[in-house]
Image (cartoon, rainbow, N blue to C red; front, side, top):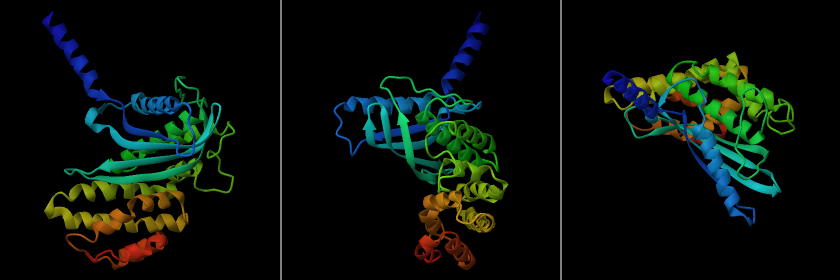
Length: 300
């Protein structure tokens, strides 16, 4: 009897310690709406938070401390009965080994968001069919975040989750909602984001994700490894030129530099110095909008 009690205790403890993948903070903002029923938006915020955090997105087992911190900020600009439109901001930062610092990887505003929502209705999602534009968009970015997180810890390990995100895109193309198609005049929507991530032309970007974080930032808590870490980060960033040579002005590289520009400048402007003239040249070519900031690299 004691044996079975012990086994049951282990199983219960294991279930208690395992967790879903995401630890998402959620905000629903309505700056342009004169809301007569403010409770509706509170209910929507809670429903989105529970959808993201209580759903099992992968077959992996995550400990509570391994959950991926991220943030979803939904701004609603208009409402017509149960129809809403606005934009969604998505933020994901990766914790750095032996530090209290989290490194931003995804900082993105999705401007093409319209959806139906009925208060107190359960948010539902199915991997192989389109049910709701709201849950499809949330699922898409959940898979993207999980894929990016995997890629930052092991080379090219996020492929499975990018494929899941691409499947969401394919299902959503049967709807009349925007942001899911290759046409329409924009190469900066959900379709192109996952297209970039699964294309072999972007393997150097995905390898950069790993080298920059796992062989770069994760080493910097050890003073004896700071120089090595910076050299690894430098080579990772320089490898992005190959990506740009194949796909000029790609969406993924734009998102990368939106998230990383300030961090890159700080990494190479503080502490142990390494030669950076060739790096600055590449950074300015890849991200010309921030050329003046990259001139500060190595001047700390």
